[in-house]
Image 1 (spheres, rainbow, N blue to C red):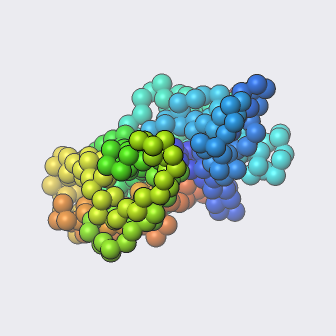
Image 2 (image 1 turned 60 degrees about the horizontal axis):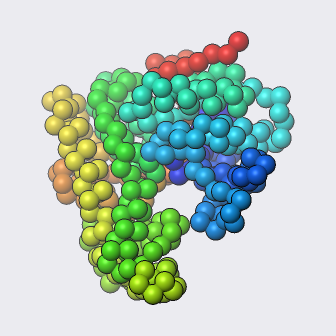
Image 3 (image 1 turned 90 degrees about the horizontal axis):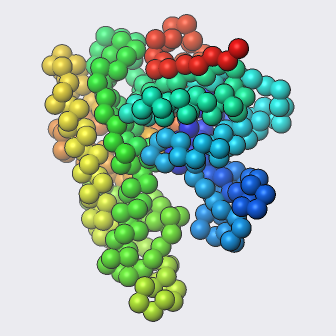
Length: 333
């Protein structure tokens, strides 16, 4: 079983079956009984809409486990669901994690998966998994550059011969872009909006580079001055402007990585271009922005959201050939 344990979404790949589950990484907990009421899509619908005794949590923040018990509950729920309710299943699990996490954070992921019922747990760096999932020839002695923009982290890596030559992980990604929109709405329009609304704005009219600029969207929220619900019309250019700071951080990480790349690999990257994966790759014009800033062609993966989980699946199915890509493992006897 391959798992992309993401800040925003968790995807599960089962050997021989493909991707069997794609759900938001959200758990709704009953505060009184400490039991989960809903996990995944059902829990996401409750975000910001729960009564006092129910809390909708996202157990992962910035690509790492922020709430260990809830993360373990969520993993256990997904593993049981994939195996159609059978509880006596102890699968071998490969989990994609950000390349910049600490040893303690790696251990937390391994422990959560072990507690959730895994027999063996292997960890693979997300950029490596994303590159394999996007179909890049990572086993060859040529330079491949991948940018994986997730919910909590952006991973930039140069890969060659099944290994990471150099990588950079910045904790600025989809969540920060949504947060920047929420802050802008508060500051400029005096409108308080929730997490789901800011994400909706980003998907509907958000862009990283000037494209279709005459689109507008009606946004509903709470007006700060009157304290009453209001509707405000916002234009695409203002949303792009609001996201410019977090986007600049992502572009700087790409530039820093390119500056440190050995010359032979840099030549390969100019030939092949840069591959863009992760949910953030779906933001309109982000490929054009990175291409404009670096002068290198940028390709968006065929299915950016699934790259990491497809990569973990390919590693599972070609275990012997790709064993060198793992960054950590635990074994339970």
